[in-house]
Amino acid sequence: MQKNASQTGRENKNSLVPLYQQLQNVRMVHRYLEYQVSITLLFFIPGVIHALFVVHNHLADKRTDQIVDAIKEKENS
Image 1 (tube, helix red, strand yellow):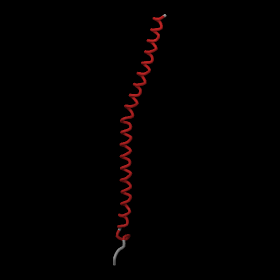
Image 2 (spheres, rainbow, N blue to C red; image 1 turned 60 degrees about the vertical axis):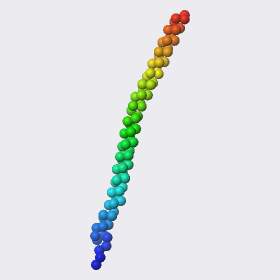
Image 3 (cartoon, rainbow, N blue to C red; image 1 turned 45 degrees about the vertical axis):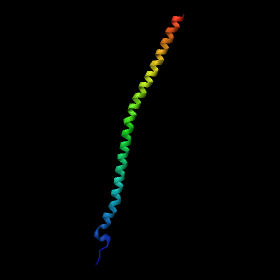
């Protein structure tokens, strides 16, 4: 007499393979997302700091130009 798959327990092992593969896929996606977020933060934070310096320098140049213009007006009058 030959046993069928449900009697030997093979059915349980075969049903775990797709579950394991799905878990592996989830882990791969999770690692990929962690990588993407870390790369984004790695370049975003210095970019924000650089932008703040650029804006600060631009505003300082505008203030300097206003002072120079005021001095020139005072000398001309």
